[in-house]
Every structure is written in structure tokens, then in C-alpha cells.
Image (cartoon, rainbow, N blue to C red; front, side, top):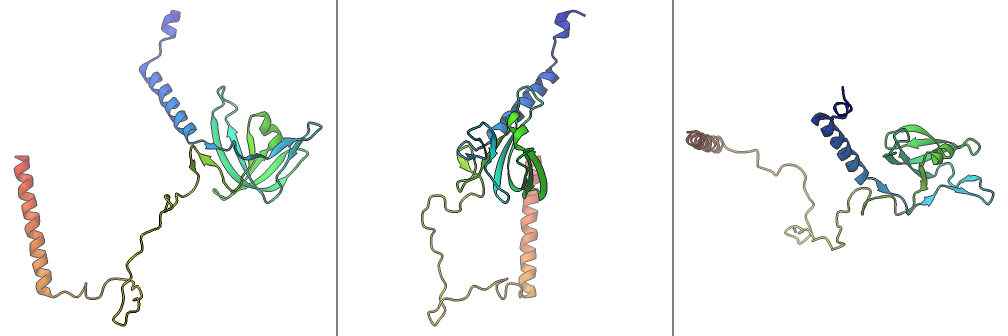
Length: 198
């Protein structure tokens, strides 16, 4: 087998490579922006790492796949700190989205390129959009007022719940007429379908 034959890549392999690239691009495009947040880990005047958050605070951790050569982004999550060991750098965390505990280490994490940030009131954003539920009134325009029904005395009527009265109380003649009309409509539809098929 020659070197040229060894380097031949099949169409299936090319499709798989492009599919993986598309998936990675799609994932990276949804990566939250956390550059504006304050660093949770800084260095003191002696060059020692200092963890600036305390137990009970929230922390944002951005992780990367360190086992892959191009180090793709894995995720960016917000945790609540439950324990800090300043000697080893171990962090005990709570992930409230998943309802489970998690572990991290800010010393080894920084060596792998992870980022530890302290969230602020603005929060983290994805692209130009903020994370979270969209606002119901994004333009800040006043919402149109709903019409209020007034009673005979001029006071607003209380909103009633449930089915309007009388909608279930139909006579047998009315029900028969409705069934007949429905049957006629169905017959005309069936005729149209037969004409269309033929």
C-alpha cells in the first residue's frame, strides 16, 4: 500500500469531520460573555493566589476540555460556594440548576485555563442578549389597558371563572342540526378530495 492510498479520506469521514466542526461552532456561539465580571482569584503582593469569594457567595466557572489539543469550551456555570480550602484550593459547590453538589479547584483550574468570576447585578450574557427570561415589554412602551366591564350600577364587574353559563344547555333540535351540518361539511370535503385525486 502506497502513502497516497493511506492518505485517502472517504466521504463519510469528511462528513463526520464537518459535522463535528458545525456542532462545535454552534456550541461556541452560545458561550456566555463573562469578561466584564470581577475575577474571583487574584494574586497578592507576594504572588500568592487569593480567593476573593466566601462561603455562601455565587461564583461563575468557565471550563475547557484540556484533554483535547484545541481546548474547546465545555460550559460556563454558576454555583454557590459551600466550602473553601485556601491551602489546597479545593472548592465545595452547589449546582442549583441540577440540584446536586459539585467540586472544583481554583489552583489547578487556573493552570488548565479555567476562569473563576464573581457575578454582579448585570449577570452573564450570551452574545448581545442577557441570560434569563425575556422581558414581556421590551420596548418600555406602556401596555394597552384592558377594557373593564361595568355593571348596571356603574361599578366594575368581578371577573368570573369557568365556562359561560348556558353554553352546555342546548336543546336536542339544536344538537341534531349541528350534527347534520357537520356531516354535510364532511361529505363536501370527501367529494373535493376524490375530485383532486382523480
